Length: 271
Image (tube, rainbow, N blue to C red; front, side, top):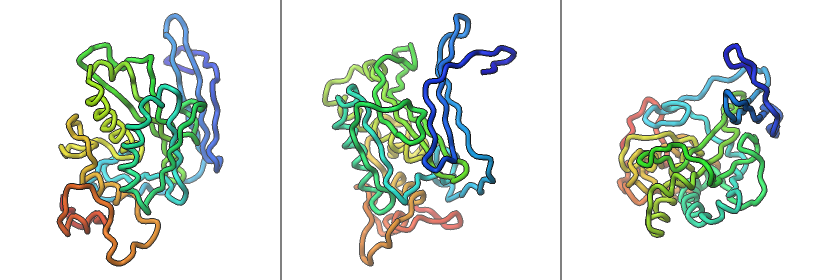
């Protein structure tokens, strides 16, 4: 690995190839006394023309930019794993969080959630993990808390998501010093927020959004539902008179219609 004028040797750890062999990943470990130790992941795609990135309404923030629609392939279920014995300890709040998104995604994207004990590293292109990391602090400062992070990769050839992994940092969570009930509630909110990132939603400045920076926001909002509807169209035609699944907030006919048929960039969005 070339860093400036210096060459640092990288020891291979893991290699993966997407199922259609359009994309490959390589994970390696590097380190010396001067530079310290670390992991590095490289990703390659076939040298093919890439299609234009679809842009939807810019009302919604997605992780690749305002209105930039890079969804998961909804032609088949999305497998997500609860990985490892440490993560099993918080399996219940994770499942509660994912279930709220699953309900919203009915006939849009099927989520298959499974618990596993063995799993490849985060760079694997075909394995999507939610896992607890118990030996890492993102910040030494006790007043700065980063309880989780989501790492994602898209496939530029298909303009769809290829991989995403959620890491929950146990040492960061312990900084909060919460009671068991408050900790459970915070875990549900954290898992909801990070799973929103996995679905490619980005941070929002709508205070009631689960994707906002507001720590008190714990539920999926109408704005979040509309962002999902804009990103994932129905895979089956809706039956006449069938109401879409909505969060509890927002019950006006205009709001429900906006979620059922998300507006295009030239139409007005009612939030």
